[in-house]
Length: 310
Image 1 (spheres, rainbow, N blue to C red):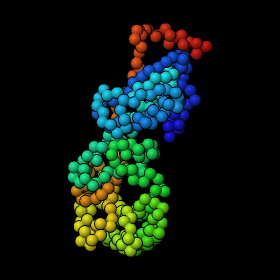
Image 2: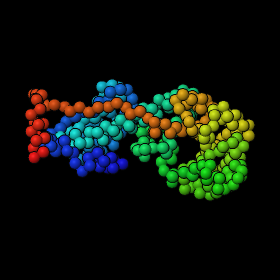
Image 3: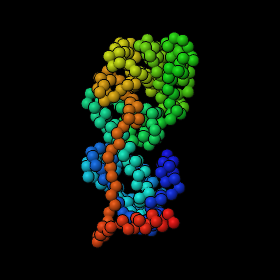
Image 4: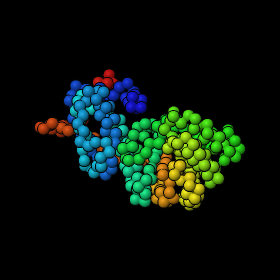
């Protein structure tokens, strides 16, 4: 991911740095937070600079709280590399810190209601595993990192197995159960309370018959909180509650997050954590050596442009 972004940014060269022969000069800079949040992407930024022999000193660790003016990291190395890598490094820090900050705020919101509820990310991740890592650093759950991590039976899978949700859910779960050792959990999307109860009964039967505490989840996509609350009561009445975990998803935002936490779910997945996050404001400033004076560069720029034109 970082290699691809760097290729796009440099396009094989940094014309400004070359024009002023800045590669031969030593560069020192410091990156600061400009607003409160959660630091994330520091390990990735340090890795990026290290590839180009730029020395990095971390002043914060990933996952730390930061305040305006706090130094995040210092760098020193070839002036050309310090400048050429600036934008990509800041993009990493801004995006990942923005995600981590939002996740921590959302997690605190739901934990005020229940200590067992976890905000988790979806696979709507423009920056792939970097986004997932940022969610983790903010204290949220990553859910699946890829399609090979777990069996997740969505409505499109079930549509090919039967017309009635209760029947297709039972068939799908039984088939998935035979491959449970290949994955971390089995989850099934259900559209109705009848389908949810049928799936929960199947999970209970398989868990009890095999004597396994294997994680089994029901995905409640676009379910209103009040409908979920009624389902949790039905699951408890049938003594199915202890055999399944509930995940709410779809159209969940900061405005209705508490309603879903109060409904009794175990996980709340939010695509907004990664597809609609706001970047944290951070900046990089060069550190001038003592005795360095500001000079009028107008003549230098004009001469450089004229030379390149000739």
